[in-house]
Image (tube, rainbow, N blue to C red; front, side, top):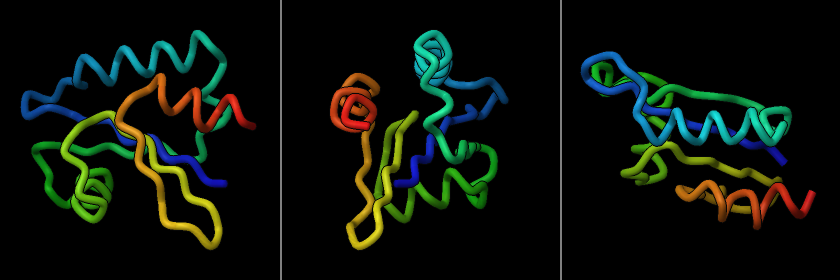
Length: 91
């Protein structure tokens, strides 16, 4: 299983508020260790890795998690608590 977190950088260069909240929850709950990759979706750069992934997966919200398992389609989670319940709590 491979888990990617995509965070958004706003046009003014700041990290989105929800992204900060989710990142804080991940740290507080010692869940960062489960992330394989963190990508930035930069509104100022449509070619940034996070923006490309969001476009490819048709995701309009950030932050989001992408869970990839061999032989399965990637699963996208835009809600932190659902991600924790369905993915992290089952590890």
